[in-house]
Amino acid sequence: MLSQPFRSLAQFGLARAHALAGEPEQELDLLLRLLDRPAGEAEPAALARYAALSDRLHHANEAREARERLVKRWPRSFEAALVSSTTGAPSP
Image (cartoon, rainbow, N blue to C red; front, side, top):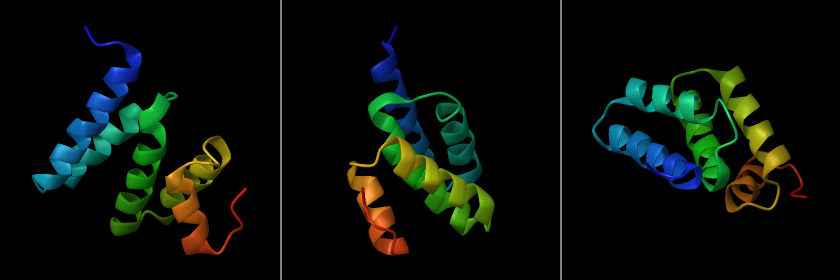
């Protein structure tokens, strides 16, 4: 059995595999399950991917909430810096 940090990374990898296979609904489902709880080191990338996928599926509120969570919980992450640079918000 995988430890929690590796489990989160494995789930994120599986979600990305669904994306590459052209299965956005399965990717979204896995990302939602992953983000139901703190996801450790996989969380910033998962939040950024969830926000991008939500934008593509025209779920503006979900995308905004994911970006807000990303910047709040992981302010020094690469993903948060990208969000801040694209939205014009100052990075912490």
